[in-house]
Length: 194
Image 1 (tube, one colour):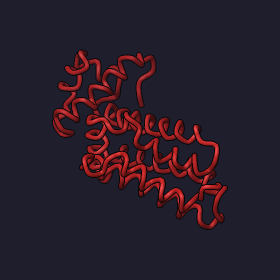
Image 2 (image 1 turned 120 degrees about the horizontal axis):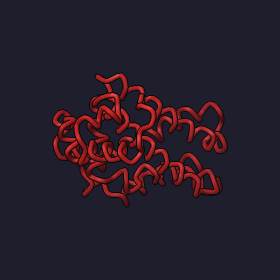
Image 3 (image 1 turned 180 degrees about the horizontal axis):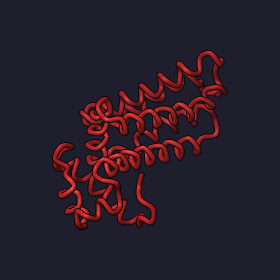
Image 4 (image 1 turned 45 degrees about the vertical axis):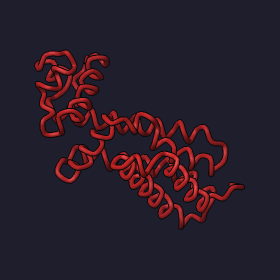
C-alpha cells in the first residue's frame, strides 16, 4: 500500500523511471538505484513514496493496467452499436501507449513474472476480470446468454495473442493486419446490423 500524503507527481516520476529502467536495463537489473537515478530522485525517496521496490513494481504494473483499461473504455464509448463497441474494445488494446517500446518491455516483463509473484498475479486477475466485465454486457446484446462467457474469453485471448505477436514482430504483424483480424472476428460475434 502506498503511504498517505504522497505527491502524485513524484510517484509518477518513479513509475515512469521504472518503465524506462525495465526497458533499458531489463527487469532483473531495474534496481532501486537505477530507477531513482533515472527519476532524478534519491534512493531514499523510493521508500518514502512506496513501501519498497515490490510496491513500486506493483504500482507500475497497475498504472499500465489502468491506462490500458482507460484506452479500451474510450474506444468502446465511441461506439453506438454493439459491433462498434467491440471494435472499440479491440482498438483500445492497441492504443499508442500500449505499443511504445517501453510499455512493451514492461508488459512482457510483468507477464513473465506473474507465475512467480502473487502481487502481479493479483493485478493480472483483476485486469482479466475488468476486461470480461466490459465485454459481457455488450455481448449479451447480440447473443444468447449461454454464449457470452465463451465469446468474451475468446475475444480477450485473441487480443492478448495479437498484442504479443505485434510486440515480437511489428513488421509482419502490423496494425492494419491486427485491425483486419479483429474486425473479422467481431463481425462473427456482432454482424453489421448489430
